[in-house]
Image 1 (cartoon, helix red, strand yellow):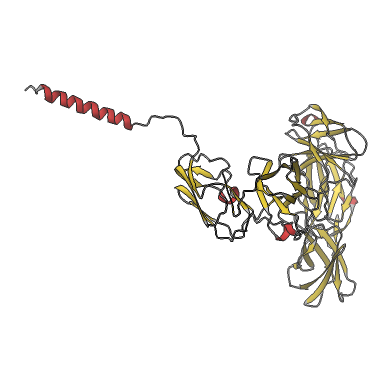
Image 2 (image 1 turned 135 degrees about the vertical axis):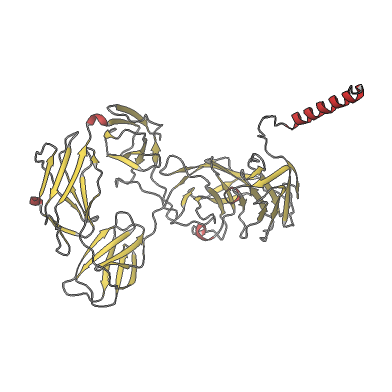
Length: 536
């Protein structure tokens, strides 16, 4: 049976249409959308004056959402009651800012969104959008620019708050602890430079904070701080460098607690070296004490004998000008028994020594009960040194490369504060690598100002090797473990052999630190020579 020609053509046309529709529905695999959203309008308009309302709407050409607003959004000057910004959990074609705080008269406000505004699909950010308005007749238009460095680390932290405090009749140095700044900006996560914009003419104190609590107030325990000496005058064409540092914490004694039958734990904050502990009142006859520093915590362990026959006593804790009286309740706790542990690595370099640490204060060691042999059973000489602060014995040995050593310590080698001894034989081993397994670095210091501390540090800034020089421009690091290091120099201005940080209230900047350009990775059996030029 033959179909009419028109019916055949109709069937062919429908089939072609279906195929074409199917093709149009197939994903094309086109280019990824990388364009940021576009602002269509703002109500009120950006840079409005005589602002009187409490709501702002910003409209976009596509759906947007807010991302990391807590870190990214900076409002200058800060508001006591943060505004509500939506949408946070979803997407919308506009952003709404609802202001709950009472706005100050004749003040320019800036909402710095950073890169928190992104489109809904690909999360392309609208870069560094700023919405600005004034409650007065004019928009303040002056700026303060600069950059932030870290006093000790090669790279500064991210999200540094940079702030201006107005030098008016209400200003005092303690303002950073209790009041929010007049103007603020943020270095965000990829920049070290800053620009505080839309400020008015005047004199200001320039402060930088690594603000852990995001409250624009300086917390000495948690935050890093940096400051420009004196005040800055605006307008200015200067670019200001601010060095961020962690202050030494002011000393504070914390309530003690019973740690063992005759051991009291004294936690503290700050520097313990001048900390002194004294019983206020009567003590048992023949009373003796020993104090040991905890190796890992800000704690002193206060050991005493004999036991108190009372429930409560008081201690006076002093540290230079600090004095406090602390009440302590005695508790019945199991007595500590003598234990020793190795705190040195199993493989020692030529600069490292074998170290044992006791958990109870040690008072004597019988060297005659110790034997040290190498792998060939040859007796090896050793010395003994005691560290009373950390309750450790160090055993300096004239070590040979590629050797293994065996310590045997008989019962009665160690005696502790309570006349107890080790009752078992203690066996320990350690080894040394061959010199060919290490690398060496010689550093030639150019333009050095002595004394100096030269350090090799890891990627986190932790010190792995250190040298101190008072006059020689040549510094050698020998027997280095093969790895990548960073090289830095500390200008030891006061000659005390350590890095000294700054102090905001005393107006003290930290000692200067310089990093060399990246150095070659240390390899086995290689000697490296580095010229380290220190700039003025």
